[in-house]
Image 1 (cartoon, rainbow, N blue to C red):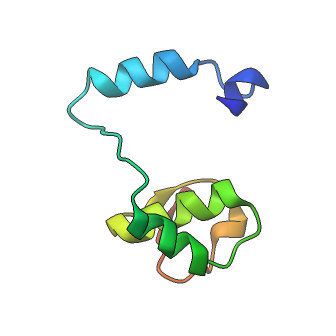
Image 2: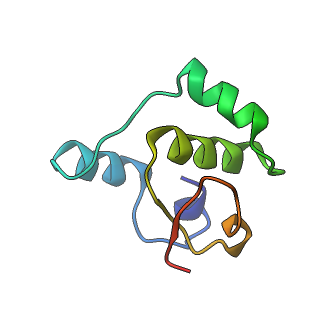
Length: 81
C-alpha cells in the first residue's frame, strides 16, 4: 500500500489482493500469536519489518527483498540481494 501510494510501484493494494486471490501460486496468512511472539525476539528497529522477518522465519521460507539491512538476520534466507 505504501509503495503504491508513493508511486514506487504501479499496482494498488486492491489489484495485488485480486492477483493473489486468483493465483494458486500465492496465499495470504494471518498474523498468529506465534508469529507475534517471534517478532518480539527479532532484532530489528521497525515493527513492520520485524513482522515480515518473523513471518518468513515462522514459515521457514526465503524472503524476497532488496533491503540489504535484512542480510545477516539469523534464520533469514534472502533472495534478490
